[in-house]
Length: 124
Image (tube, rainbow, N blue to C red; front, side, top):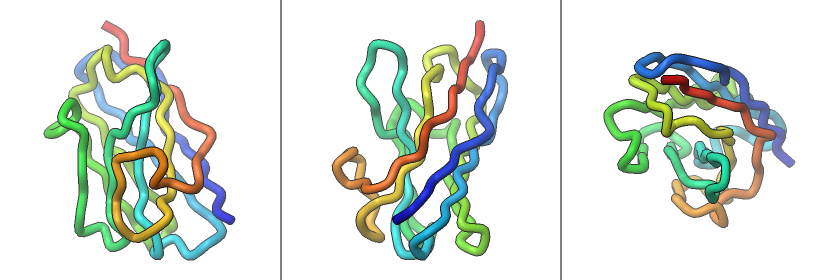
């Protein structure tokens, strides 16, 4: 069993930055890939970014490439999502998730454990 707790969400103006954190407990953190997803009002949850178990492989949805950076610190059992140049369309609930394996998946089905989510709101 893995418990995931996100933090760092909030209200920010367009062009601003936020850093989300996801603290994991339970199963050995370094043994699985991690991902960030988001769900905007009225939309389906979508993949945002993922990082392999070692941190060496990272993947992003096209809409956040060059603005968001995913990273992990296995010593601290934490994964981060640094979000820069935020846009109003980034407004959503952001979820972190632990994958079923060491390999990143862009599909929800590839993740076994989910956090409760943290709200990010970007104002114009």
